[in-house]
Length: 201
Ligand code: MN
Image (cartoon, rainbow, N blue to C red; front, side, top):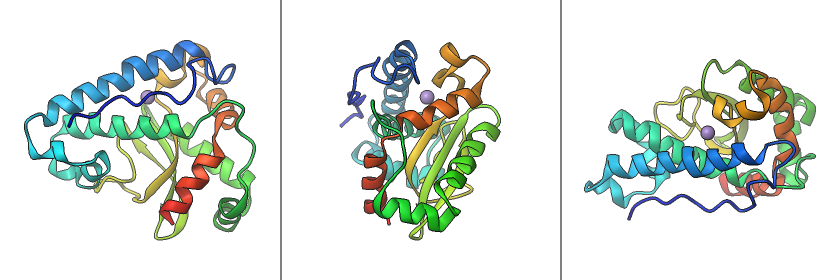
């Protein structure tokens, strides 16, 4: 049972003008596809093929680097596509809004913390909002690591992910990562993040 590239739940141009269509198309059909192809090749013929990508991530220290990099890439991007949507953004409501206020003081403070996690991640990586022991936390990881991994500095269940690899923004924003991060808030699918929060807490 090989992993498959998930279909994007919206068109490549659906996140315009915040994330451009060409970036989305290359990111999904080339970068994410490569992670899927390479993790499948790395686990082909082994018992690992029976496991979910989450199970693999949780025990990632047992696997060689190609599984960590490409399996992480597959999990991270699958989450990333799902937490974005056209006509999205704004602020969360309900229990997630209450939890964000209680963990970070306010939505504005959370936004600053998460944005800073993205801008200060040196080189390639991800910023995360996670649920750890029932509480929300913000962290970042290098490369294609994620907080599910047993090697992660900060562990938890990711409910919001932001890709800060240059391939996620360079065509439109070039070296201006902070401009991409500012635009990211306009495409966050809070309904999906809330759903994931309710499942994780
Ligand atoms: Mn990416």
